Length: 487
Image (spheres, one colour):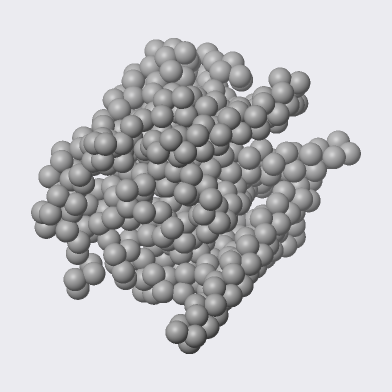
């Protein structure tokens, strides 16, 4: 079909699906790397003689660098060329993976993880930005549905692959293969991507707001860092001060963008997007959605492994119905292309809400004996809902973004996605552990029920936002029809 093919911005014909697979392969490396490391942390701590604080920074260094760099590198892609930034990002990520795999100290590993985060921030915003421009119509809906499958597979397969590679102890390398496995994949993506990813003409007239880069990175760090550290450290005063300081820092960033807009200069985050109610409400839904899933998987892993004695591999098997559900949902929603986005988002979110309620009841009343299949049905239901919701959600956010600003729009969306994930993990884990040790008794079913209250609240809020957006759209459609009739 003509919709399934698009010309690159340079005018050369290319197969967008081949390009999309390479883009998503690079994105998958980033997604899986976030979760694959968690399984290997105990081995890393023993092997490198690391403290509890240092081992936490193996994850925190990556998350901070990644979240702070998403919007700036999204804008750099608009100016320097998205293909170029994507390939550079894959290169930096792959090189840093090698440094991680051969790290001789915990300090070297933490520094290499920060470089990995920078590489991830360089490539990830370009993925959706390029796909947003090389696809149109029905094909765009199918392509965005595919991103939902990749996102879920990365989150769920990470623990499986990490557990398998660490347990196998290949050539006596212990945990190191979880990083070294990125080397051949990254090299393939770079070499193939140079040939098949379409070159898009950069906006050479665009300038970079370096002060805005500093302000945005500072605001994101002031939110994400205390959220990561606060729960573990018992929320010391500096965490609360940092969170409070993020508000004026964010306000300064917005003020800076408004001043640039008044002067007719390029903004890091276009003011037109900040004034776009559709884009902002979409960003809010993305934050809520992605604050729910990572936190749920974190406490679920503790629930099944520590609470019921499943091995890391069995834990990964227990969560496998979720990505299977996502695949089914993504296949269904992809057939609708870009039609009925709000309705599909509402249906997917409703199923997610019902699946979370089902999971909450099941984990609160665990069957005996407890096996990897005990949670299959509620997790498959949740996955189906996510598969149905993720494609229309991304399309709703990016449909308000002009092609010129696709990198900035995509980068901002994914930056707030990371902020949402960090906040969600902190809130859900706090709810879980507060209830777990209540009264000096470890009650895992009650703790899981308590933690999943957050998911019920977030998906209910998304449904409210969807309803409000639908009401506004109907009102605007009525006004347009009346105006046309008057003419």
